Image: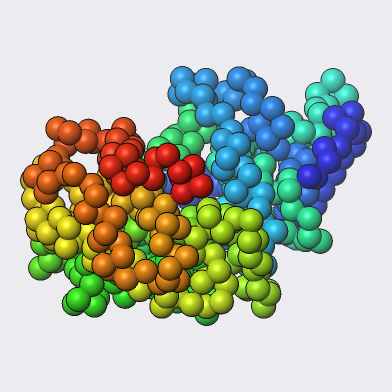
Length: 389
């Protein structure tokens, strides 16, 4: 982690290149700054979540750091293709910044002509947007990571609140299914790309139990009426069987390396060995056979579905994907790629009829998913075998 400099540093001064922009809200600067310096001079708070952010008080909200998000970004910034293309937004008191127009530079300081107005190094710039990126950048271990920043000088509290709300409350999040679909364009291998390609293959093959059931971009495809799952739902249910760390695996492949397989985790990462050996077709075949057995056992609930039936929708699918692990572990001693009939022999033990997969019996949300999974485990007899859980 980047070590914070002493708050008692005197006469700190940093010169950064910039461009001055004029927009309806007023003048501001687009600049580039080294991430280590950025981490040292900002307070949003990266190091502590104080309640003195004026614009948040103005809005009457609090926004503490998400430690999970910070951890993810801290890992991401050390990958081979880490990139923050959008600007971090800062507000700086005009007493601590000087614009040198002839040189297109900003001089950032923590001191003024009056010693009474000198401030701590960590209080030079207030973060309006980007606190998680800055926190994650403290984990950067490389030589240089320049960050583009938008700097507003002497911005009043009302304008700060407007910027904050515009960026953080009104922006549209990218659909997860679209994100996974874009992995098709990646040249390097990764768990995300493999799961995407498996989803696409199973959705396109007419004999597949997933034929035309997957919304590739997360929304209904015009002219198709049987799509019950998003690509994101499919990928996120599968990827945990390939890897414990999808970011690290992708980064290793980008660096022309190959992930390792820990045999002790074979019961948790049931498809890890296939993935490392580039046997994606085998994973696809196992899924096709497993869900083919589901379709044969419950043709109405899986193939046709209907109002109130949940088996071929998100909760049903997730429960089935959880049940895939014990089912596969119980069969792989016999065949590395169990047949549809192998899986069907397990599903025939489950005493549930098609019309019983309803939201009345299995409530919407994670509780219904867990209830369905426990029902599968109990009826199949796997519940007593902890090695299969």
